[in-house]
Length: 218
Image (cartoon, rainbow, N blue to C red; front, top):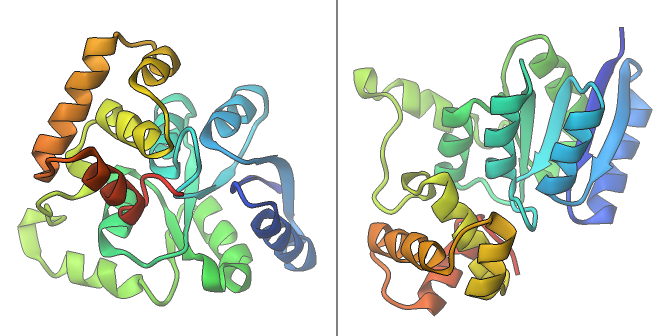
């Protein structure tokens, strides 16, 4: 039986490279959809059966982490592989903590993608070799499990992250309220809570943080 996958990345060149890697080496892997943002991924998930989702972590509108959260809530048995330009430990830990099963650094993703899809589909886990040591270090921390980083992105609620992403992408408070179906004041509240949790005092710092943490991109 073929493994049905969706590729999601806002750069067509990246999607082309991933598609080519699968077409060349993944004889039993079929690409059933492609997306440029998380909203498109959710639409595909509602209309097609998918075995493995391959998600860029910093997609616009709905980033990879938030897309993964939603998929894991609404798609029974969803298996997800995250793609990232960077091997930032906080991103890796957050992705694994919410239930992502694979994490690939884009620099080597085309070489590892077929193995990752196969392993994740079979119920296993797959991390790029350059970041696998994070999981080992986490396991060695004992009974406390995943470390909690001060100001880490997973300290924020889902709504706070969405507001933060949209702010960083240039949306006004009124636009954010319309997109998320919230009141003007509620958007302000989420923004202020995020800033307090992250220890930030200026919106420019909030935007810089969102980009650095992979919540949004320029």
